[in-house]
Length: 176
Image (cartoon, rainbow, N blue to C red; front, side):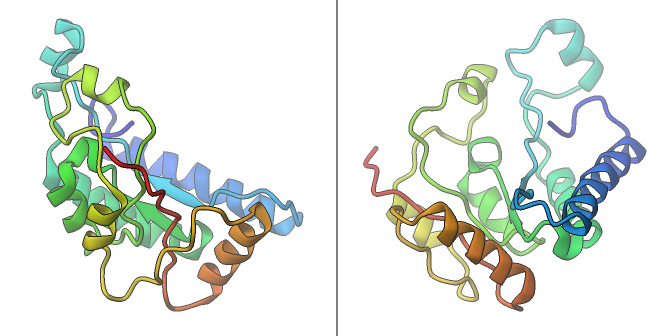
């Protein structure tokens, strides 16, 4: 979660911890690594009143999310290849904007989403694969099928770390 009571320094410290974890995993040849980074912006419309007063707002501030997205992409570099906005928290228009600020993956459909909507988010809880594909940038690799194997996923994650073209994740054919 980001954009509530943490300071910019704390955000950078968190990013540094993530980057160091990736470096350790790579140095030791660990097969499991972080393959995507998603900033989950604070939604506090239904949060306890003392927290809402402390934060001073109920919905994410898109500008703040975009700036953190850009810093995260620069800071994490090739260590975490895929960066994804949360369209549930930022709305589909905000998430699409984030694609120009360092994100390379619009995300996927959701089976069920309650936490963010119960918190008061206004981004929606359901998007079809067609809606999300329609928001994918022209430079993105076409989404693979939703039936790929874990080995395919690891191979794609490795390729995205070594390729100049970002990857996207599978989108299911879910209907809302």
